[in-house]
Length: 414
Length: 109
Image (cartoon, rainbow over all chains, first blue to last red; front, side, top):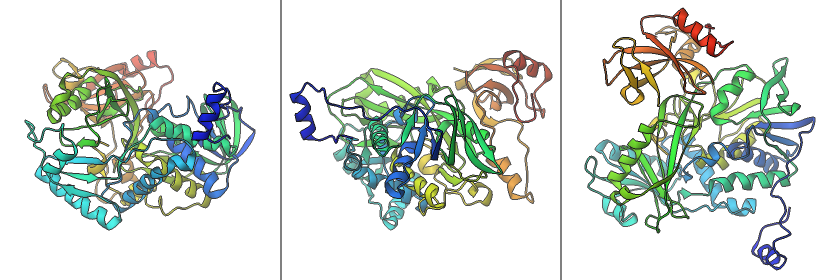
């Protein structure tokens, strides 16, 4: 792999950009791999990358039904934060956030991580107490957050309306090192690095069955034929239930649609990410100038990647209250992704009843921010059979009653 | 946008008039049940890609709970039926079979 650098740009400029090579190979599947990962989204590719980088396992296939990064990785609102209440969540999300800091250098691919700061508005007295509690918990967890006053909110984000008609802004939980990154670039960067290590990323290849022998996984049947593997990682977000069904176990997961939309590009007016969970909407401005908007998930099962109009209406209404200046903006694009929600709104990174088959799912509405940490933990779990990052996120916690209850932090918005 | 016919008041209600109530025909377990039963009742869900049976409430209408059969892959609504039953009516099952031959959902098909 030729490295990307300022020098490479100068070199290519001198020869009409004829020397750029493909970022990743597009191989046909081999007969057998040490590890098969199903799902070439951010989490699947990150798992493969850290299997190679941290454990030297490079005989890996990443199988993707569509194209890499074409699912939720390319559909989210790119927010990165780690201000969670529960210790296991803070650990894995903060690991992810800290890996994002140097991800561009690690991957030699610009993921445009922008630690511009994330604020979660407190608009009820209950929320003030909740976020103060989270700020104290974060202090103990080593995550830098702070509860700030309405005046500080206005200073950081001048376009905000502090005295909204329904809910005034009473303060905010502020994470200065949270922010955004370019979502596609995260998938592309990991894919390029994986391909460079000799891993095969096999796109447009759908898994049709999981083959097993004696309670152990032996491979998968795909639209490109049978592929053998010693270990199998299922990292397919919204379609986790479908894959689990093939592998013969059931999941405490429901798939629902989560929507996002972007406005026409406007001049820079907002250089932080603002989330308003009481009125249900969140917004940031992309580098192109578009306002990137997200809101709540639909309440019913859905696999169609499109959601209800009235949910978007609710989100936009809330944001117009909070940011009156956006009321005349035209919306350019509107889309949905299928997210996998668990009962406690925390993910599952776990062994499964099928030996050597592992699952990484349940990230719900907030998977993008966790990609590097999730890959790091999942790779360790698959390579060594256990990982300190993932040990609390087992499938069996719903039976054992050991929930990691983030429904307050994660059930509403990310 | 989903449109259901409320089996009680007969209104063709669109989605914003209704509240989703999750999977239908759950087997309920109370205190004293074992952990696995409790887990399956509270958390494990069919989550099918295709034919699904759900509970909905006509919350901004007559207020009654009812059942609905729907496809999660196309958002097609097959029909609705009353809440006081443990399984979908035969004619609805036949209607689904005509549209989705070979469908199954838990013990129903």
